[in-house]
Image (cartoon, rainbow, N blue to C red; front, side, top):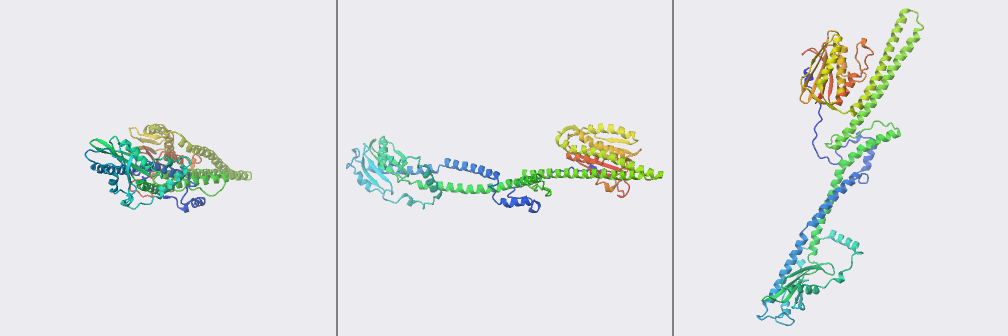
Length: 572
């Protein structure tokens, strides 16, 4: 009894959420079908052409990456910063030149004019302008009176050597070819550098420095600044300064090149990681699907190629591992069902052939024997064989009920019920049956309710089988005891009797189908399915059931048992 109270209900092992990479946890090659091995060999490392799931994973990962890159390019302020920095430098330079001209003005200054005072042309000749810069001086009527072109070092000479911009140049070339048919030629319509300066100088006549950016004929960016030359609050002229075409374009291209290079590297990494991720999802799923398809193909072609083996991926701590375990369990249950049907067919054939052969022989011999005692023996044989055929009829009925049980356990909805109330009702009813046979019936059930989810009628069938079996093995004066104990998340229900006990060699067989260990006077009254059905019902509820003999403490294991005990453990 101590053993019964120490029962531990089986629990599913906990699995850590490890990261599964590649084809980890895939069944070894020796454990898979030859067709499966051929499919794996054809699949190779990259399965883009055979796996829509892999293509979808890569596609959606690249969509997210592209959105990220577009957002970076749209929100990047580096290009604007370069433009502002260059325009500010140009404004400072133009204002400095205007200050130089203003310093040469006499006290009674007149508007700037060609050949006037001061000599602006001579002043411009003394300036050291950077190569590519254009300088213009306009009078109060926006007419050019002097100009100069920078001959000094170019801006690029003051910076590090320009890097390669292969990606940007390639994309620009492709865009130019694509947009050429629909993009109008605006190069001829663009104003010259001097015209830009003259137009901007008119706006600077208000006494405010003006800045403007535009494109040159070859597509380079040009910054133009116009700042007024003032004396005593009067605007006497305008100094206009234009940058070299495309001064900051190279810097912007290099900045964009670095972003695109990172995008290219990120794209390659995303594709590689997507392939690794896909291999952990698509390849195992492909193996599971292929195993199921092989089984269906064999059924369609009526091939007998052995059992279908679903790849064992249950070591994976994810949903694919659960799916593999579920499929393996379903296939195993299906084959068990097939094996049971085959065993049933063999048992029925055996039960039919042997009695019929014996009856045929006994009837034939009955016609020839003369002695009455021989005729009595033959009649006993015939009676025995008829009883065996009668047992066969009950066997067919029981196996039919057992076959329906599988589907009923799956289809019926489990409900909450009071297990102790059910046991009390069964004990009251079956106790009367035991009393009619002269057997004492003792119950020891907890007074508080024990709620559990399950099929009440089916569990009642289990305890009816156990108690009626105990009654059938007991003689007048024996006793049956039914008791229950609650242990944390489980309940133990024990049915024990003082009958002859269970033969040691039968303890591991009593729950097998068609096994029966009955006295001779009960021959033909049992099909050997009651305990098998009981075990099936208990295990369908996540419980356990076993049988043992009752022995005194420290008794000789070989001594006669004091009775039999059946223990049922159910989760609650």
